[in-house]
Image (cartoon, rainbow, N blue to C red):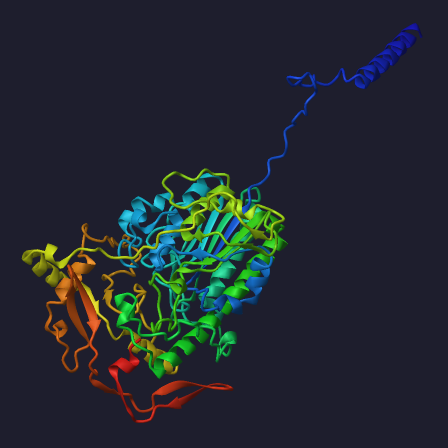
Length: 586
């Protein structure tokens, strides 16, 4: 019994002593003191926050000035009204492959050296230098799970997976909606023309949703970097069947500069561009309709991605960026269609951002460029942007709350560089021997296709079942030179093509013009039936359209024409009238 009481007394003593220690904070670690002797806050380890996801939704050839974004209500409601709109977003090079290369690397065209959709686009030089330093490689090394689905670069031939991408579904060559091939994680998959299985915008959306679900299920602790590269509204403008009857009679592209021609006070191209003919105006209206129809599938995809992120519980931790590689024109200054000009309609792009810390309905007036995407993605991920990048992060513009219209107080750039393609070598710099060699090479490698837009008109105005689709995958020019694809490009065993610009291989633009201008069909003055003439302006050659009437061309009997009426569109047959070749040129 004595032992019991002795142990009980000891137990009570220990309990009382423990209470005393707790009441006097004697059991805790000593509180750190500051220089004034006052107790400062003790910072305990906090759970590490997961870095935000990043989703880039990119369209091809989408304009701002022509108003195409106004016909995408889901995108406007979810991203613009629910996030921020950059009112002054531009591309530094209004051409597909150079602009996309700038998006990937954060570099101006003169630094990544992708000058056109043919010159150095996805070449061996690109692969060994700049493709190893895209935002994908930096984010992958930082622990992000990366995925790319859709159009990549115009000359990507599917023989490899670009570095940095964990899941890869890149389109082989240029934008298509049907009858295309995809490199899916190293496997070459060919698709046909079945809408339910092959329509490419829907396939991109479905693959992206599957990527998000797989990432959440198996890699829940890893943030995601996802890119969706849609072909819309780039040609051939094949819309989903359910949208093929929408937007006839839309005239939002009839801006103040629409058919404003000629312009003798502007650059030489606008000086020689005359007013459009009625068939051209009709063509621009129809093309605007078809472009808007293709964008409806992108609008659906934006909502699908949004709802999937919401269902996975990742919406509030995800930045969604919507933009395009460059703008577009339809009749502006008399230019029927295309891009590549340093004007607002070609260089201005849509730019919407939704994400953590962004107040809904925010409007940002500061300039933002396509080269700013890569450093911004790295900034979101907490990765320091390398010094060689030309762009800068715009994240600081987004994370300033309670200011619906942001004005950045510090010095933000108000100018930027717009770059054009081509070498500026004068014709006098060429030797006779080099000229002869270049002529031989030109005859083998170059195919002159000045009637490309005639074929496009015939394709547009004929029934889709009776006209074969164009196979022009590499060029995004309105007219001029199209380089023929080397044989065997569809072979899965081929290495990536080398598309180097001179002086590595090939000839420069001015050398090519000097060669062509030696031909009899380009000699001035213009003769009946002659389409182009070459004139020496200083140390450069220029090709000008002849003002004489071209050889007559009779439209085939039974040719269908898309004619607009107040109630919609109807198809009628041409009368047996004579139309010139220029009537069909754009």
